[in-house]
Image (cartoon, rainbow, N blue to C red; front, side, top):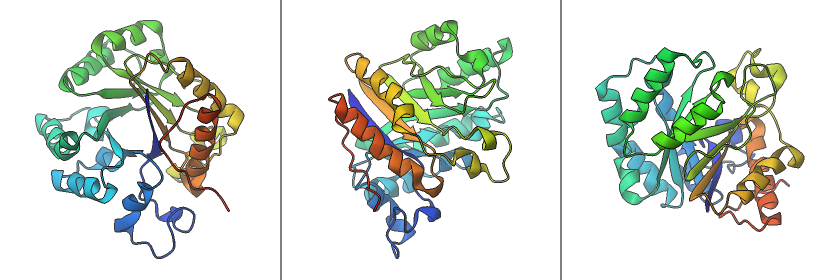
Length: 270
């Protein structure tokens, strides 16, 4: 099992002095990031599909040391009015990554309001068909989807169920690690229950530091499935104030306790 560990995005100005050395140019952020982690989830593509030139530049700055999961544009998951052109641009834009062998899963994050209804099930099937020939990881934030029939359908379709860690709030899935394909995908969003729904800035909901005890069940689950999985992605989204950087180090330590190695060198505080 190949392990890919990283964060959701890398270009955070508030990481300057915490992770990025003072004076480091933003254009060198990815170069520095690639010295420590072997995966990143590209969030910018949720708001605007980059060009192939942009992704080629990211590939060059990373030195080919990072694999890229690419978030699907919001017109697919939120507005749900994506045109053929949106899909075509997404696949064309990521071509440099695919050709270099560093393209990871596409990640479709559906909102909490996307409940399991006949209409939404049909729509999700259509999206799955659009990504045939690609690896698609799907995050469904309403707990009506976290059911055996859905997971069985994902297995039949070759879809990757995104196992997302949320605060323990009603309506949010609390399913632990679920693997529906040879690829497992874990997104750790933090457990800041007080700010998940009630916040002024979106980043506030992710302001959280996991304890080793909270991460240990996921590490054990990965160890138990190591022989079944081709690869596992572990992506931390608790990025405010650099907690994700600390937790990646914790996760690596826990993996090593169970005999699993991750090709990352997380920065150490102090």
